[in-house]
Each structure stands twice: as structure tokens, then as C-alpha cells.
Length: 304
Image 1 (cartoon, rainbow, N blue to C red):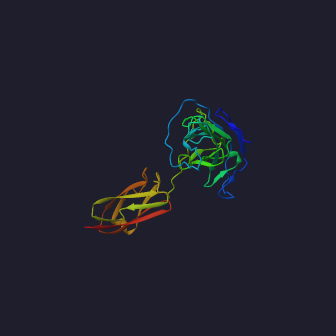
Image 2 (image 1 turned 60 degrees about the vertical axis):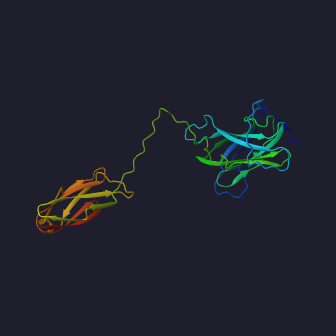
């Protein structure tokens, strides 16, 4: 026989540790379910403290005179998020259970957890029978306490089914209400940081030359005039290569027609080096710019 429990502070602890939950949706789960312990407890009675609520369409009435509803939830974890990343290793979720009658009403709850898209439960997620004394009290309800270990930061979904004492379903809450993505992590990942230990600065990834480009690609100059050419060296991810040596070489016939200054230079923080070409004599010339194994050429035409 199940004992009816009034709203005195009660604690029923069921340690799951590393025992896997039974999946509802499928027999096998590719991802490993996080290890954790769970407890279910009722809240303490708050006589005379009531808060009228609207009973929404989520109520399911199976022909009984008592209608239950979960009016809301509150997630708290106090100081159980040691590294302050928003993923606690221990948390409590309060479900505000209300009833539309003035007298005492009894119920029990079945909780479900969702880690990877499938819902899980077992007998440890079924509460004892609790009694509500004040139908609309915002402080009467049920707590689900969870402690996690062994897993990196992730999220879970939670839903609860409220049943009348006779076993008929009264209402369902979650996960679409506000319990669809609750963050958590194992206690091994939730480590307090030493405020006196400086966080190491990550070593920047060097930007290695991958592409060389020249602008403009063709130049037309009158004798004794000049024009600038910009050479750009970038890495594989588009980063600017700074400090790369770029050399300019004029073909043998072109040496009589143009000059270039400087003959070599280094790229700046934008990955660029600028060269000035001066026309000397009519004709065509070719300039090749080299940065390591990378090469790019342009044509220069000199007119009168």
C-alpha cells in the first residue's frame, strides 16, 4: 500500500550512478547517457499563501472532478556552477503543481529526461504520492534534484506527467514549455578556477604564404612616367602574411625599357608590399614577383 505524504519536507533519493536508464523510444542508444544521481521531494506547506492561476489547455481531464496543472518551473543551482560557464553540475528544478479545488488533493509524478533526442525513464523517476493542501499556492509542488558526473557540457530536456492518486493522467508539462534545453556538465568538468593563476594566452597560429597576387595585372606607361604596383601575400585561410620577403625581377629585354624600386621588400601587416615601376624606353617588359615558391608576373607596355 502506498503511503500518502503531506507537504512536510520529504526526500526520496534514488542513486542511478552509472546504471543506464531504459530508453522509451529505442532499445539502443549510440551516445552514452550521462552518469548522475537523482532525488524527488515535495515542497513544504505554506498555509494561507495562495496565487490564483489560469488553467491552460495543457490540462487533461479524464472524467474526474479534480483538475491538476503544472503552472510553471524554476531551475536553480546556487553556487554549483564552479567555473561560471552556465553549465552547473548540480541543479534543482521546481514544478509548481496546482489543483482547481479548495480541498486536499493527492497526486504522483513521473519524470522523463532527454539527452540525445529520445526520452528515458525508469522506476526511480516515479515519485511517492504527495498531497496539495492549498490548491493555488505557488510554493506547493515537487522538486527534481540532479547531480551529474563524467560528462562535458551539454543540454537535456525534461518533462513531467502528473497523475491522480487513482492512476489517471491529469496533465503533462514540458519540454516545449520551458524545460527543453537545460544546460549541465559533469562535476569533473565544473572545476573552480584559481584566481591567482593567470590564464595562459593561446599561441597564435602562424599565417603561412599560400597565394600571391599583383594589382594591377597590366600597366601602360608613357616614357619617363611611373606607376605603383601592390603585391599581396595571403595564407590558406585568407590571412595576411606579414614580414614575407618579396623580390621583383625584370626580364632581360625589359631591363632596357623599365626600372623598378625597390628590387625587394617585406609585406606589411596587411600582407602587402608596394613597388614603383618607371618607364625608360618604348617597348614591352615583364616583371615577376616572387615570395618563396610563389610567383606572379605582370606585363608593362611603354609608349612615347
